[in-house]
Length: 137
Image (tube, rainbow, N blue to C red; front, top):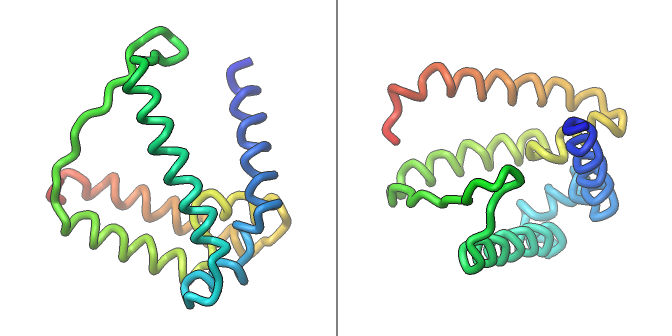
């Protein structure tokens, strides 16, 4: 039953991605060329909703589905790790035309070439897991 909830949320996410055109390679290229506000509006909405969600969780001391308190741990304030990680993520996004969410939705839409992008995303995640302890965090 729990997996059914995740499947329903994933399907809803895919529909929102498709209807908002966030999975469009053309829209992503427009964003990276600063030719349209469309994707910046989607990203800005997501960030605003995320900030609002965290604010509500902290203000009302909300708990997770199992009744455990939701705790936010402070992050180390290092600019280099975010700068380098953001550059790598952005390059992959610009070259492939998809970030992780729309990548999977594009596969569902039948864009077979996205399977290659998805496989390299998995390889990159696996590689990070191997070298994670050697990287400064």
